[in-house]
Image (cartoon, rainbow, N blue to C red; front, side, top):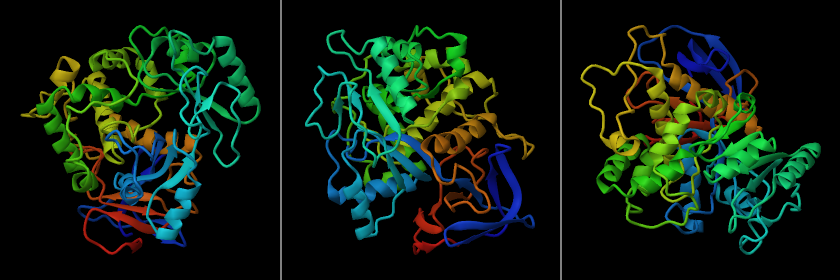
Length: 430
């Protein structure tokens, strides 16, 4: 690639113009190059900390015929690595990917999630009942614990603390899935969990030290979709935006569901604006964010789910940034309906090319370096000489364009072109 600008994770900014050489799946050189008009921009492969491949986002299970589209969906949004949660053993899928030569992201899988014993653990293939669950050496070191309650009964703090310590002593990491429940949030924090998933409920009691000592994947999109389906007109407008930002979603899934459909997500019916307000209130937690799209939940498709989550992050973080709106900017009433007032506006485009919007820089760092290091991704969320050639290619600067970080144009994984939004022959990266 000649005269491109690549993401420098040390500076959280794009580099100057460089030539990038790739050979045998690795970046072999990055050299200064001459400036050209309209360069391409290169981002490290993104990482997603929580997806479910076996759920098809319309309330059913993913069929074999859908799997290649599902895997390509992650690539279409620039994701090189994803972590599966609540899926059966993925070993057969990996064999099928190799056999059928499907393109897809690099997969990792958490341990089977733990449920409170009195909850239905299904057929036993996906969840484990109780805190004595066994460790599968073929899966990674992440151990999700679902803090759902049954008739106001759940794991005690003593049990949770003991299990967390036991896992850490054996090289594992306990993760708390809180389902946006206040008691679950406080139990997880009080017992020292360092990674939490799902939105923070109103009134959650956080001590200053706690705000700094945990990673948080809000997964706002799950609750956002539940509320959005009550507003068909808004749903239609948002769906149109997702389709513009992800051609793969537009081609395969745009017409897959309608907002009146019910879903079985076990989350509270609290208005989304309440969780948005709590997020704004706890500003210190914004530096702790971990990226998880929740793809597989109702309405959240591979690739599109990440776009939903990133747009929500940007809208909520912008409300704190106190940036002026662009002149004559027309803001959608979507955010009036969901947040109670206008909070979403595209950041102003600075006249100085190097004065880049800080919010998008932070989001890119979370999508790449922070979440990829959490997953143990081989590229570490960086572009570096000697590192794997996992990256997406964009035709515009995502820090400045009106559409934001998305869409991407092409995706390269291990030096191979695995996705492009334009008709092209897949193969060696050019």
